Structures are given as C-alpha cells and as structure tokens.
Length: 382
Image (cartoon, rainbow, N blue to C red; front, side, top):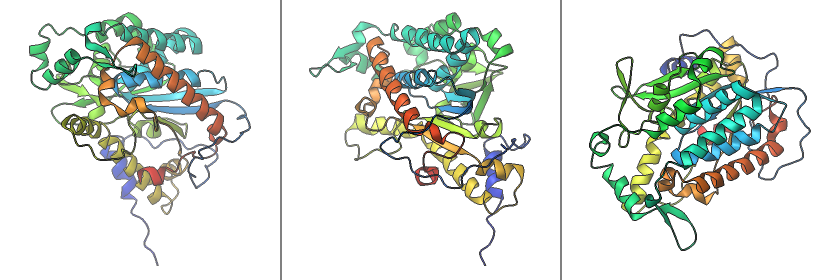
C-alpha cells in the first residue's frame, strides 16, 4: 500500500517563503477540475465568461522588457468582466503593478491605462542618444559607448560611476505616483519584492506601507544603482529572490486564478559560447532560479495535498488555477542587452507585442478562468 505523501511539503513551502504563520487562505466554494491540460497552440472559440472574474497577476521583471507587460495589462483592461484582486512583482514588474494600481485609484480602467502610458513614456525619454545605435537591419541597440559603460559597471562601483546618486527613476515615480493616497486606498492587494543584501532573503512590501524607496529597492541593480536602505537594512533588486513573488498571491488572496506574465523564456535552446552570451545567461539564471524553485515547491505542495486530509490549506492548493502569458518565439527577448534599452519607440514596440499577445491569450483561454488551469503547471515546473 502506497504511503501517504508527507504534508510537510505544504507547510515547508509556505514557511520557507515567510507565509507559514498567517491564517490559512479562504477556499472558494467550487473546486477546480483536478487536471491542468497543456494549453493548445491554436485558439478555439470560447464562450464569454458569465459575470465578473477575479484574477491575480504575477508580473516578472526584466528592465526595459517590462514594456511588454505594459501591453499585456493594456489588453486586459479592455475586458470589462475582468477584476483584479492582487498583483505581485519585482523590478519592472513592481513598477507595472504599482502604476496599474495608482492609475486605477485615480481613474478606473482608463486611469490605469493612462498611468502606465505616462510612466513608460517617461522612461523612454531618459536614455541619451549617444548610447543608442541603429544596425543595418534597422534594429536598435546599445552603441559602442553604451556597451562600454555597461562593461564599466562590472568594474567600477555605482559610487564611482555616479557619485551624486542621480536616479531619474526616483523623480519619475515621485511625479507620477501618489504614494500617500495609494497607501490609504489601494484598489488592489500589492506584493512588491526586494532582496535583503546581507542575507538574500525576500522582503515583501505591501500596499499599506509603500514608499518610493521601497519601489527603488525592488529595482536596485547593485552594479548600476546605489543601494537602498530601509529600516536600517540594505536592499537590492527583488528579482534576486523572487521574480515574481508567487506565494503571497496564493496565501493572502481569495481568487484561485493566477496569471503569470513572464519576460524570461522558461527554456533557452543552444549553449552560449561567447563571453557576452555566457554573462547574459548567468544574469538571466540569477533572476529566474528562485522563481523556478518556488514554482517547483508549489507543484510539489499541490501534489502532496491531493492525498492529505482536506483542510482549508489543502483545498486552497488544489483549487489553484494557473495561466501564463510569456515571450516565447519573440526575437526581441533573445538579446539580453535590450533590457537596458529604455528607448521610446522600442518600448512602444514591446507594448504592442504585449498587447497583441494579451488579446490572443484572452481570446483563447478566457473561458478557462474560474474553471481550470490553461497550462500544465506540473509539466512546466514540476
């Protein structure tokens, strides 16, 4: 007779991520189907979902590539029957989550759309022309000067390259986000990730405490930016510890539908050979390894919960429904140096790609919301 799976998988996953001491999540009335089929490649013609649908969004960071997520969110805002409960993110994912919430607070769906557009337009105006180069095939990338400065960031510290701690992102956030009002009246639950530099531990900043420094901590690349100190602790980019955070969307939200918006491909084909290719892959792995580990532990917890006594925690795990929008087969995401390309037309192009993919996802899989997963999460992350 097969032994019962060890329930400690579930508790270990939650406690290891800092969520084991909170009350168990509320379970929806109707459980989801037990299987999570792989999403088909060609969209069918689904019937429109009846009534409002609540969804949680986990937004991955990736520098300028975060403009793709801008487009995805813009597409989701077109759906009047869709309601968002919680958003999580690190780095660019955090920016998108907070701008989405702040804009919604100011003007509903249209306000969220305007807020995202204004922020990314501002980002696109920050890059000096001298750091850009146009290639023969009309692609835009870093100029030799831009690449040299990027290499210097691996030799010199931010204190040497930027002794006055100039940070245009701070000015942009202060001018666009009403943090005081957002802390008091956020329309969504927010989970913003940052990494404690001394320990590597993840810290989640919530909507009721958000400050501009917490946002900058979530996007603090230590080779480029001065460290951000909060409550006496130094913080670096949240992508080092969770990109994006997933556990809080399960543990602190009631909705069981979770949409992953991913900028880094889950699989790279081929082996990097040149030094720039190797360095790019090392950086990419550093920003995805913890997310992959978190998802694998979550899958193991779901599997263990099926044979465990049906408590609220186990029911909540079994009722999770996963969905995903990613950047597979998009050539723009094969070049890591374009993550630094904060160039207006390039960002708008990424937005258009994200909007197109978001609309395609909605047309193909919106009928799965509230019913089943639209990806095979066990095959992808188990």
